[in-house]
Length: 304
Image (cartoon, rainbow, N blue to C red; front, side, top):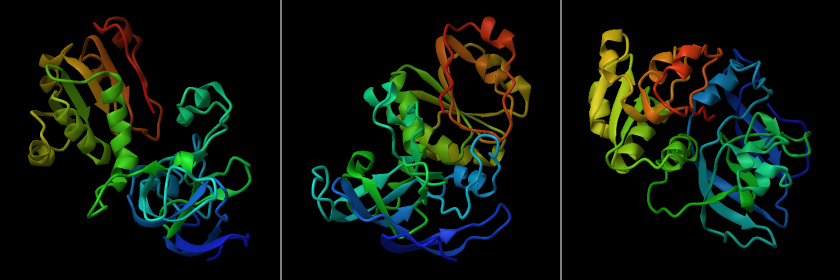
């Protein structure tokens, strides 16, 4: 299949055309390299669980699927062409692309350096449009990407780049709250779910010096949790396992993208502690007000 013809750099990828469709080869064009753009030849693109949600249109009420869809926002590759005004990259550099590729550059959020919260809506790496609100964006399940240098990341890495790609979504999604809330030695961090996000959270929190506890419904993941550095592994199917942990964590990161009850985790957050939600289940969560009022902590945060 081929996208509507546009002038630009011919490339190819894999696209899906409906919630039930299989992925198939797809030819399309990237825009020409502008003065501030870099052309990246993609070497690796991670498979994020959100790619699956979006391809199957499971987040329709929040982010309706746009077909044809080329997913992929964990992208790493080499710069093969630079625009005339580019200063951040040179040809041959390794570059990464995360979840968004542009923003309005004028709102309060953009001015504060948090373009991902652009008040006018950032341009998603795929399943969205460029800031002209017309040109569709196609993601990293493809051969090339053209992006403004200010929205690409310079990657200082050598050798096998396959492990770099997941850092562009799962890595930064879990590192961000750990950094924001100053996780370090002597703190207790809980990680809900040991999947693509969760395994990153364990490794990073442990590297920061925290005591790390994994909460999971899958007993078979205990060995993996230990190998990743977790100090404790708790099976959440039995409520009795959770009672002794009330009010005991400085930070809990909930990474689960399936429907589940987050109230037990609110009850495990300690005084002045924090619950960060980075998973995005299909259905809204129901939070009992009592968990917020009587939870024994002074602040709670939800971060997406």
